[in-house]
Length: 83
Image: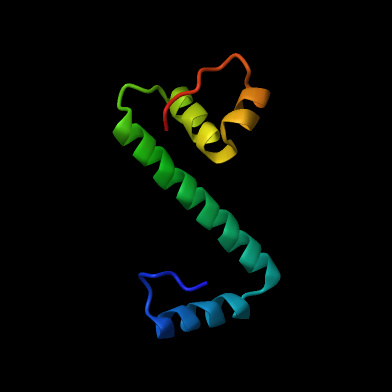
Protein backbone atom coordinates (compact mmCIF):
# COMPACT_ATOMS: atom_id res chain seq x y z
CA UNK A 1 0.00 0.00 0.00
CA UNK A 2 1.47 3.30 -1.09
CA UNK A 3 1.51 6.05 1.55
CA UNK A 4 -0.48 9.11 0.49
CA UNK A 5 2.49 11.42 1.07
CA UNK A 6 4.86 9.47 -1.18
CA UNK A 7 5.20 9.76 -4.95
CA UNK A 8 4.56 6.52 -6.86
CA UNK A 9 8.10 6.33 -8.29
CA UNK A 10 9.64 6.92 -4.88
CA UNK A 11 7.44 4.23 -3.37
CA UNK A 12 8.44 1.73 -6.05
CA UNK A 13 12.12 2.51 -5.48
CA UNK A 14 11.68 2.03 -1.75
CA UNK A 15 10.01 -1.36 -2.30
CA UNK A 16 12.83 -2.44 -4.63
CA UNK A 17 15.37 -1.46 -1.97
CA UNK A 18 13.51 -3.41 0.72
CA UNK A 19 13.21 -6.47 -1.51
CA UNK A 20 16.93 -6.37 -2.25
CA UNK A 21 17.78 -6.68 1.44
CA UNK A 22 18.85 -9.98 2.93
CA UNK A 23 16.27 -11.48 5.30
CA UNK A 24 18.36 -10.61 8.35
CA UNK A 25 18.63 -7.00 7.17
CA UNK A 26 14.85 -6.86 6.69
CA UNK A 27 14.34 -8.05 10.25
CA UNK A 28 16.86 -5.50 11.55
CA UNK A 29 15.16 -2.72 9.57
CA UNK A 30 11.72 -3.73 10.83
CA UNK A 31 12.99 -3.73 14.42
CA UNK A 32 14.57 -0.30 13.95
CA UNK A 33 11.39 1.10 12.40
CA UNK A 34 9.37 -0.28 15.32
CA UNK A 35 11.78 1.30 17.81
CA UNK A 36 11.60 4.61 15.94
CA UNK A 37 7.79 4.56 15.91
CA UNK A 38 7.67 3.85 19.64
CA UNK A 39 10.17 6.62 20.33
CA UNK A 40 8.10 9.08 18.31
CA UNK A 41 4.95 7.97 20.13
CA UNK A 42 6.66 8.40 23.51
CA UNK A 43 7.57 11.94 22.48
CA UNK A 44 3.94 12.66 21.63
CA UNK A 45 2.78 11.24 24.96
CA UNK A 46 5.32 13.42 26.79
CA UNK A 47 4.25 16.50 24.83
CA UNK A 48 0.58 15.95 25.65
CA UNK A 49 1.28 14.93 29.26
CA UNK A 50 4.39 16.79 30.48
CA UNK A 51 3.70 15.81 34.08
CA UNK A 52 4.05 12.05 33.38
CA UNK A 53 7.05 10.24 34.81
CA UNK A 54 9.07 7.93 32.56
CA UNK A 55 7.18 4.90 33.88
CA UNK A 56 3.85 6.63 33.25
CA UNK A 57 4.88 7.35 29.66
CA UNK A 58 5.64 3.64 29.24
CA UNK A 59 2.27 2.65 30.70
CA UNK A 60 0.48 5.09 28.39
CA UNK A 61 2.41 3.65 25.43
CA UNK A 62 1.49 0.10 26.40
CA UNK A 63 -2.16 1.09 26.73
CA UNK A 64 -2.05 2.64 23.27
CA UNK A 65 -0.37 -0.41 21.74
CA UNK A 66 -2.45 -3.07 23.47
CA UNK A 67 -5.85 -1.46 23.92
CA UNK A 68 -7.71 -1.14 27.19
CA UNK A 69 -8.86 -4.76 27.59
CA UNK A 70 -5.45 -6.36 27.12
CA UNK A 71 -3.73 -3.61 29.10
CA UNK A 72 -6.15 -4.15 31.99
CA UNK A 73 -5.62 -7.93 31.81
CA UNK A 74 -1.84 -7.51 31.96
CA UNK A 75 -1.73 -4.69 34.52
CA UNK A 76 -5.01 -4.81 36.45
CA UNK A 77 -3.81 -2.48 39.21
CA UNK A 78 -2.28 0.20 36.97
CA UNK A 79 -4.18 3.34 35.98
CA UNK A 80 -5.47 3.80 32.43
CA UNK A 81 -3.31 6.82 31.61
CA UNK A 82 -4.22 8.96 28.65
CA UNK A 83 -1.74 8.52 25.81
